[in-house]
Amino acid sequence: MSVQLRTGATVDQAILALDSESGNIHAYTAATSYDTDVVVRSNEARNVYIKWSIEAEGRLTGTLGRDEVMTIFSNPRHRDISLMPAGAQLLRSVNAEVESKRQLFESMSRELKETRTRLGRAPGLPSVADTNFMVHCVRPDQISWKSMHGEALRLVIPLRVIEELDAMKTDNKERLRRSSREILSWLESQFKGGTGPVRIRDGEETTLEILLSERPRYRPSDPDEEVLDVCHDLKRFVGNSILITADYGMKLRASAESIDTLQIPQKYFKKSSEAVPNNAV
Image 1 (cartoon, rainbow, N blue to C red):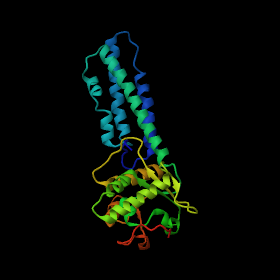
Image 2: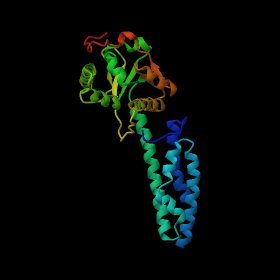
Image 3: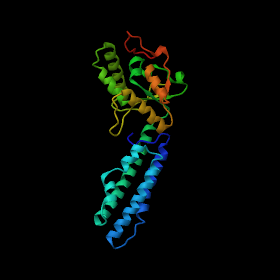
Image 4: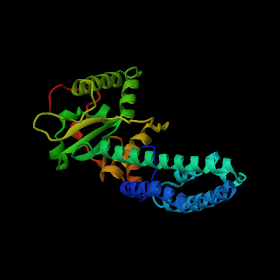
């Protein structure tokens, strides 16, 4: 998700704020008089626009991240409006900026709504699997998720995990090469060109899916950071999420960020010498 929310703000609050400002900007500018003198009209349009922008910045800071709000109100035309001499050019600039802001608010609101729909497309508790789990534990379909957690899960594999598994296919360690190739081959057989969600196996309500971004995504140098970001996004848009990992360090990081982790029983860990088994547990 590219729209950054303020800590503690909900997606619904951000959508409401953006939709409101989309209407507010026209309500404010509609108050401009229709004086025939273009100098008078442009000055009044500027005053109304500046008054709206100052108030809107304060309102949006209540739901959007501070940097996000600063970006909205720091473009060159927005700055030039304050310094431009009165006249036809100023009036055109104000009108163009009003329309640009309206389109921006509508686009940001639409992105949040589409992300909410996309992330909420499947039932079950969103459970984000990291690379460590995929490599060092048995296949997801060989785990009895409901008996382990008490409810059906929605297993989510971030794209970054797939990318890491792909990179491991040429790793120097033979076991990592074998495990990554086998799990990727299994995943491909499950989705058959799609990304899910699909039932983990017959008789199990837990589903499995690969989470793709519909827009260019933020890709930090640390893969674990991106996986944790997916947990945060799911929690923000769906209401809750947990992390599935066999890495103690990752568990500590998740705990520090108030993300719950699922404890994987030792019986589901692969032995150092074994290949991925073919029979379900």
